[in-house]
Image (cartoon, rainbow, N blue to C red; front, top):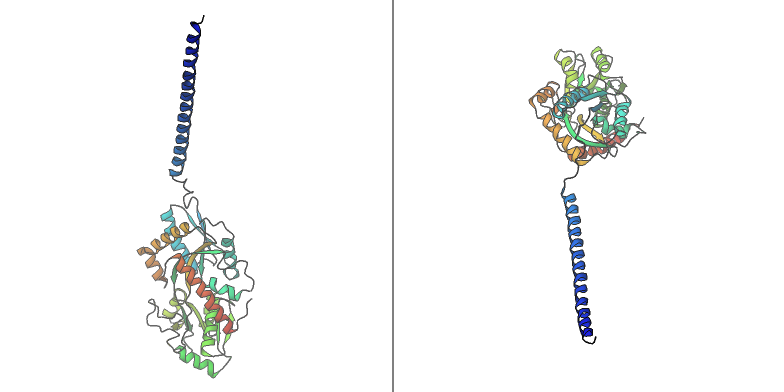
Length: 355
């Protein structure tokens, strides 16, 4: 019996290390499995971050609505349709020109200000967009905050025209007539607070003359009365007044821009005629709702500039007496801000009251 005790003790002594070995092995296997799991999870996370983000819906993914806040046939409408047709080709989507005249461009502009900022609603804007904050008392939107300036498209001075029977052959002579008989000469505009109204008031302010403003419901009736002798002068785009000038029904005296127009290089500027600082150049461009994503703005800007560079649009613009003018969205934004400030000062100096 005594001989068996050491044997049993020895067996117990041998059994304990074997258990620890099994326990250590199990722990090692657990740690290995845990480490493998962590490595696997980490690889999944890394793989997820490495995958490119799901692309946004391509632009445009449906027809684009192009709001023109003027009646069909005006320069704004012609420009919008020409550019819109080219963009439709590039985008392989319809670009639907939607004329929404009224309220001095306010009706159409408000539609765009309230639209989603996804690029599928665009607005044709022009000089009136910069005038309205000064001549309309309660705009239903902020002309800067509620819109995104995308790209300028063109510019073209208006032309000061008179009845051919009028003795004045130059702006100086027209001003001399007005000074000789204060309150007798009259000019027509497309309405109070409109572009041609402001041009007349700027001339009145620069020349120090007393003339009568006669508002019309469009340029056509104003020009009809100039040709008929009921009023003495008016302002209009070359695309509108040019045919009448060539036919001898109107006489062109000068352009309203700071420099001569390549379309009418023989016509002096009003500033050249002695009224320094006179500059009233209508311009056009494309905007969208406020807060459009910058990558989208850059994309549309690039497409517009590419369209304007085509021979087809160059010819169409030239035929309308419009000079192509474009640049970055940032440059267009800065120009609009400067125009709002400049025309606010002109309106204040001229004493024009907001409607």
